[in-house]
Length: 382
Length: 249
Image (cartoon, rainbow over all chains, first blue to last red; front, side, top):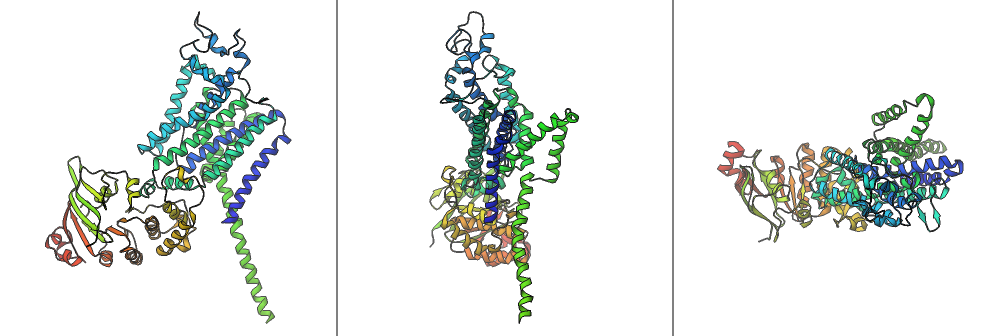
């Protein structure tokens, strides 16, 4: 048992080392690309936590990702050159000016009816804080209602799916404040003291890599706490846990909120790395793609789901750029998914676990064999 | 005279006109082992549901010692000291046997109080004792899903023992068990006698004779009779309603 645990931690450490060393081998284009995939890896972790450990298949994880992304993007939009070029020394997003009614004051407070919502986002840290607070708040409200009502299984999935589509619609519809389906583009850079996080420089890559490492270890430790174990007990049998005196909805809501926070954080990092936020983050296909990543990597393994996301994205990048597959690459990804679900229901992580199990159990057997061999020889000696 | 552990006073539930349990009153003493007997549909499981909070009652009260627990939420009733074993064995299937018991050993129900590692030395000792008692020491590191039906039933009993509630409700603890398994279950239940107040719903008469001291017979949602095994066996109303004329055998 102990050695199995050590192997697991060693694998985690190896992953982090590999991630830290990756830029040594890559040019800045690929560094930026891998940074994006690492963000997807973080989303894989969020999905594994809610699906694999809490047993809640959230088909609207994109909602939390999108919320995090938009919150930071609003701040970065105001920090952008394009928001300052309009003859005013106070920033106003360019799209608001283009769409302003004639005679409207060119001030953030009142250029249109809802533009005052942007005022606090002039502080980048306000945007960054909201990028966590908003997803957590949505998850807490939704979780409290859904889990108190004892809605479970596929019904939760349907509700989350409906919710992400609803919010997507609202974001597209609220064109004056969100720039509709064009999303927020031409963003400024995230700044810490004097360091500007240009998406194509190494510090940005390491911002993502270190964040992912922290989330990875943090989540792995979290599911090992008593609360994490109780959560898994709840996943296996809600009723039994309830009759042991646990307030089931409180646990489910708490971990849904943690999962939302991770997704929101990933959304913010994605904005830093790719310099835009768009309603496509809340497309159904994106949320379902995340589930596929986690399924392929192994939904009940934090690292598995993370690696699953990274590997699938690398494969799809490669395949989609291969001439023969330019059209068919989605089918290739689909095929991989079908094969994994059919033959590796616990994903790549399950495969790795079985392999480690075999390594660990083989050792005592071979020790046994040594004993048996030594027996006859001792008889011979007599 | 022992103190009353569980007092049920005129308890009933009305499912849109159908009274599954109607005006049931009984007092179970501290440390008593009470068997609930009754034909299918007599309201035994519904009575358990009403006591443990799964079904909300429409009349009457339930007291745990002096606390009125009528219609509390399940987890609060559980925390007040009432444990329940289900008819269909339910354990945490993907966790190991030991982990199952550790979860039950957790004294603090709140999320934030549990954001730390390990269940503590007390819990380990408690878990080891329970493993011994339910005879699953050798299976401690197995995933619960791989246990046999009988072992799963014992594990669920073990969850209750680890939690050490004042009152234990057992809903058909021998359902689907072989004779040998049934006997072992009766040994476990007899072991608990005196330390806990126990209420058992059971059909298996062999098992009932091994454990029973006092029996309450339910019929059509109401208490038909209450007494010792002989008294119940010889009660003409019970014979007519449930046992047929052949007696308990």
